[in-house]
Length: 256
Image (cartoon, rainbow, N blue to C red):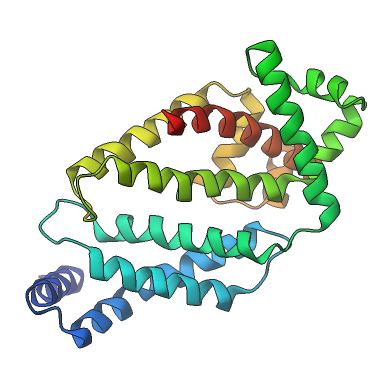
């Protein structure tokens, strides 16, 4: 038997003992066992948001979410704990960054203008507006509109992740019969992933590439710009435009 297999058996035995006894010392052992998830997610998030760099604060929030996940996890359900906990850890960290209000006032005002313009045009046109239509509505040049997208990219990222990890999780919870992660949740989460894939497939080619490289390959903006042979600012523009479209489309699904 390999060391990996032996470790998995030990973890399963630990889960069985904890699910039966609910002993705090066994809970703490499980938290230590999965604490690597917290630091891994914290490092990735900090690397994504230029206006936030407090890794240890995120780790603290993540550990609280991890402890809550361990306490609520139902071993009898056919759900992988790492997946269940990761969603809640990341959601807690995203919520913490939002509460810190770390973005400059000017950028928040700019993001609000873009969001309001998008909402008005969606309502008036009965469809998703193009970047050219948004630029015209805001009375700015296409170049200036692109600059606005680039500047608010981090805020768009936070807003989109908040939608997925907070409102999305809330939506999934409402579909479940209880607090424990069960087959209903697994189906709902799979459905949400399908909705994301379908909407990503409808993006422009460059938008699909940027989204894939950023979220799937976990590359940074600078690395993506080198691969595509375009400026960091242009990558941010493409990224921001893609997130605007996805937020509108996925947001509609989550409200259903």
